[in-house]
Image (cartoon, rainbow, N blue to C red; front, top):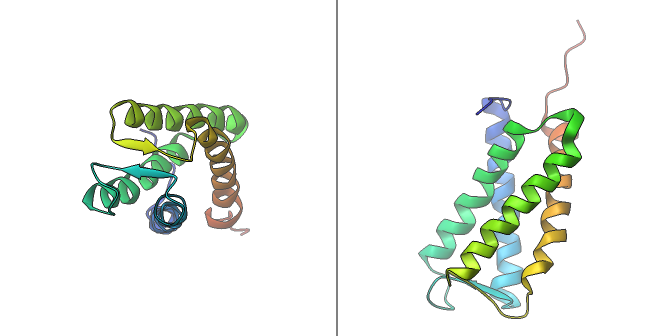
Length: 131
């Protein structure tokens, strides 16, 4: 894997993405009860592992492979990858969708990856120093 992220950028990106993933999980899965992970409706270790590990790991992969000149193509590819992961979790019975239709996730992933690209390039990435 190409190493584009610095140690500093990883330390900033991973907790921010984890926090956003937990906020989304809390509102969509816990409060609204639109989806559920694992064998029961309770928040358990499977929820913790999935929400804490998958989004930050996908983010690190996405940002390390990101190319500035083809960012929209990468957003589409990673949207498809994320949707495929969710689809496979759904088919395996690990993720249950109640009020949330599976295809609702596509625009969410697309907007998330676009926002992540912007946030990384404009806020986190260290600007080159001018002399």
